[in-house]
Amino acid sequence: MTETAPMNETRTVTPARSLRGEITVPGDKSISHRSIMLGSLAQGTTRVRGFLHGEDNHATLNAFRAMGIVIDELPGGDLRIEGKGLHGLTEPGDVLDCGNSGTTIRLMTGLLSGQNFFSVLTGDRYLRKRPMKRVLAPLATMGARIWGRGGGELAPLAIHGGALKGTEYDSPISSAQVKSALLLAGLYAEGPTTVREPHLSRDHSERMLRYFGAEVRPFEGGVTVTPQPQLEGREVAVPGDISSAAFFMVAALIVPGAELLIRNVGVNPTRSGIIDILQAMGGSIERLNARELSGEPVADLLVRGSSLKGIEIGGAVVPRAIDEFPVISVAASFAEGTTIIRDARELRVKETDRIAAMVSELSALGGRVEARDDGMVIEGVESLTGGSVKSHGDHRIAMSMAVAALRARAEVTIDDTACTATSFPNFWSLLDNVRV
Ligand code: S3P
Image (tube, rainbow, N blue to C red; front, side):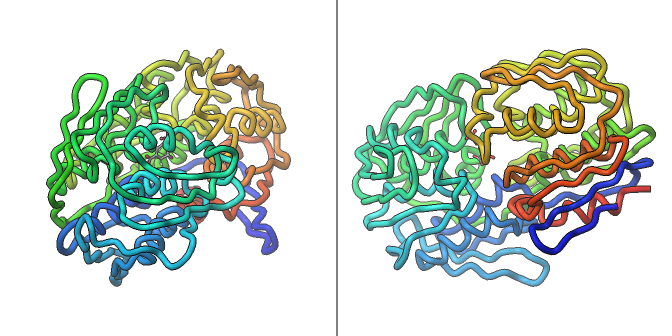
């Protein structure tokens, strides 16, 4: 059972006897952001089914409304976006607040660089600490004029949009936010824009740009976009977010006798690293009913309680599972032997430093976790103790600790859980529904 205390949304999660049932998780956060952006820039109407009504996506939605785009919420939660074409946005009358959303601020920085007006982007106290030069520096090579605090590293960012020229950028990090910012700016540039990255990051921008009629050419190690006369409004069906499903996958694996069917999950290969990692640990996960929705692969996932074993994780799978490492560290805490996570330094600059946060919170419950500069080393334990833990204001830390609590010996209290509304507003009720 989970209980809410009204003040700071502290919640208490009790150990689970077992878990059973069928669930559908909310729509994919990354795809939902992109559907608003491309729907607004397209000619004609875009209808979005399965849109994620989380706080991050509402930040993007409000920003486009503030630039003159009409977006209606239909009964049932679908969106209807009246696109005004690539040059139809108007100068916003105020600062655009991206809230907690790194995807909103970084993709919009690229997009706004190509608009013929002035704009300012900011966010909450967590977002205002996150690195922005990773997008500002390559955008500057395209001729973008952007200013930020700390010599251009930190938001608020002020953008004087205008003429851009295409670029060739070898990104030192595998980041879909960096890649997407450049591809969106590239729609407005003179000449093609090419981005290379060490390992392929999520390719939702590439797929959706193509779905809306853009010329996007992926090649081994990178992608090229060609400036576009026009995008065409489309119907977009957003699959369930595999990053949200991941909490229920790990929950079902670590609770003995559990069995969960998670329907309609996006299993794009650039996102499905969590399935590969958990299967390599010995987890029973079956993909059923594989199909495609608006250019994105989708399946139902049947997950059963399993004995897990420790493994080594690094290299190309890391960007394919980048948001899942908090909950992977929970799975590893219940696996036999040692799990080593490396090549995951990016975890230090997510909504919070997720390496430090998971080491601190799992340790508070008797977990054996050590931080490395670029990852973690985790020794499996029989079970965790009860106790009090912190979310660090990070949705994925809060939900990971709720999953850990299911296999603890006594109840776990998690502070400040309101942040789960960022990506998974009905997480707590779904968790209650599958307890038996
Ligand atoms: C996202 C890209 C990833 C991911 C984030 C969403 C996106 O960030 O962590 O949650 O929608 O493009 P990075 O590009 O910083 O790796």
